[in-house]
Amino acid sequence: MDRLLNVTTGLGCVLIAFVLISVRRAHIRVEYSVSWLGAAVVLLILSRSHSLLNWITAAIGLSSPALALILLVFCVFLVVFYRFSIIISDLKDANIAMAQRVAILEFEVQSSHEIEQAQQVN
Image (cartoon, rainbow, N blue to C red; front, side, top):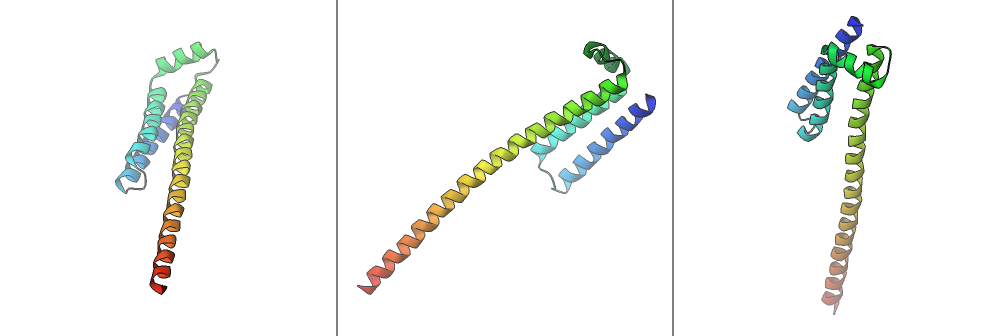
């Protein structure tokens, strides 16, 4: 059990370092890094607080704190992935709306050029 908790702590620290490095190099936006930092903090808290983990294990009704830890980590990352799915869906909808506006503008520019050319001929 202690080995699993130590590995989980290490993974939490590595995740925090990767996120901070990515923010610094502008590979990830700050508003998206908050979810990952929050997940890493939850990971660290769960892996370092034995009493909290034991209490959650009893509350859930599991027999092993290790199983409860893995289940909770999975749930935390599932929430993060769901949040990013919502963000991606919003971005896709905005991209479609922008492409439609650009198509309308191109049509209007093309129409105005054709009108100008017709007036120059007359």
